[in-house]
Length: 507
Ligand SMILES: [Ca+2]
Ligand SMILES: [Ca+2]
Ligand SMILES: [Ca+2]
Figure 1 (cartoon, helix red, strand yellow):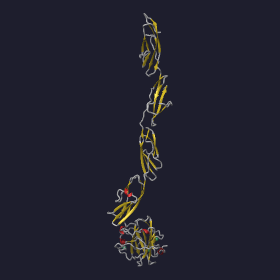
Figure 2 (cartoon, helix red, strand yellow):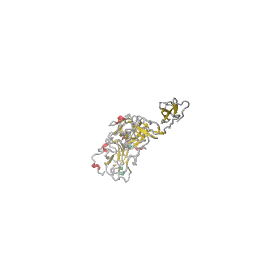
Figure 3 (cartoon, protein in one colour):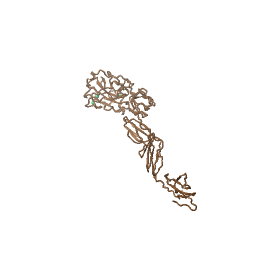
C-alpha cells in the first residue's frame, strides 16, 4: 500500500525549519521539521562525524554517516497523549536508491543520543524499496541490511516529546527524496521547537487522587536539562493553583480544605532562556466522608449505650478496637471512631457519654418488727417509680413479717437503683407484776414490773420499774423492751381493812 501512497496523499512533507548556523549534516544543525510539503534537500556529506562520540550509538547503521541530513521533530503540548507517528520516505531516484535512518529520543541531546529507538539499514533490494520509513505494517524497531522490508514500527509519542533523526543517503545519489508524515500525531508537529532544548523536559509527577481530609500534599515535579536559572510557574484553569503555597517553585505543597472536592488540573511550566516545557497533572479530590456518631450523650451510671457510626463505610475503627458499625459501651467515657469509605478516604468523630448524678437510696424504716405488729418501710424521696420485692409499686409498704425487703427505685432520668433491708421479728416482752397485792387500810404495797426493760409506763404515769400503791384499784404497766416491743400485764390490788398490829399477806 505504501507504494501507492505518494500518489494518494495530497500533503507532502517539506523541511521548513531553520538551520541554526551549523550544517544540517550534523545533529547540532538538525533541521526542525513541522509540516507537510515538498522536499528540496539532497544530503551530500557528513561534515562532523556525529558517531565519533561514543555516547551516540549508530544502532543498525553499520556504515555510520555517509551523506547525512539530521532532523529534529517535536510534538506540541496540545497533542493527545499516546498519539502515533509514521512517515514514508520516497527517494526521487526510484528503484536503486537506498536511504537509511535512525531516530533518537525522546528528549536527548546531540552529545548523548544513546541508542536509536527506530533504525532501518535495509539495502536497496529490500521488499518495499526504494520506500522506507515508519509504519506500513512493520512491527520491528530495527532492521539490518539483508532480507528486510525497509520499514520499522510506528512510534507512540507524547505531547512535548522531541526526536532527532539522521537520514543517510547510502549511495550518495543527487536526486533527493520526499518525506510524508502519517499517523494521529502528524498534525501536531511543533514548528516552534528548538533542538537546543531537545533534552529539556518537565514532569509534574503522577496524577493525584486524594481525600480532602489529607490536608496537604507536596507535589513531586521534576525536570531534566534545565538546571540553574530555570523559572517555574504553576497554573490551573480552575483555581487549584491558589491552594499551592508557592506557584514559583518546582515542588510546592498543596494545602487542602476539608470541604474541597472535584477534578482539577495543575500545569507546571519550566523556562530557561528560550526553552519552555510544560506538563499537566490531574488532581482528583474526594470530599471527606461525613461522619457523626449517634447515640446517647448522657446515660445512667454503669449503664450500656449503643453508639452508631452510620452505615455504608468500608471500614470502622473504634477506640475500643471494635470494627463494627455500632458498639455497646459503658457510659462515663469518651469514644472515637475512624471510618474509611469506598474511596479510601477517612474521617473521624468522637463522643463523650457522660453520666447522670448517682443516687444511693436507703430504705427508711425499722429493721426490727415486734411480733403481731406491723411496720412501714418507705423509699427515700426523689424518685418517680418504685418496685418492692413484695410486688408492691408504691413508695411505702406495710410489713408484718420477717424478710429481706428490696426496692428498686427509678428516678426522673429513668436510672434505677436498689436497696435491701433485712427485717427481723422480735417476740413481745412478757412482763409480770409482782408484789403483795393486798394491804391494810392506811398501808401500802409495792408493785414491781421487773427489771431489764427499756421503758415502763404505769397507770398513773410512773415510768419506774416499781410502783408504790396505797389505794386499791386495777394497776397496769406497759413495758417496752430493747426492741421497742411492748408487753402490758395488769394486776389488781386489794384493800383488806385495818391491820392494827400485823400486816396483811399477799393473796
Ligand atoms: Ca554529521
Ligand atoms: Ca535503506
Ligand atoms: Ca522491517
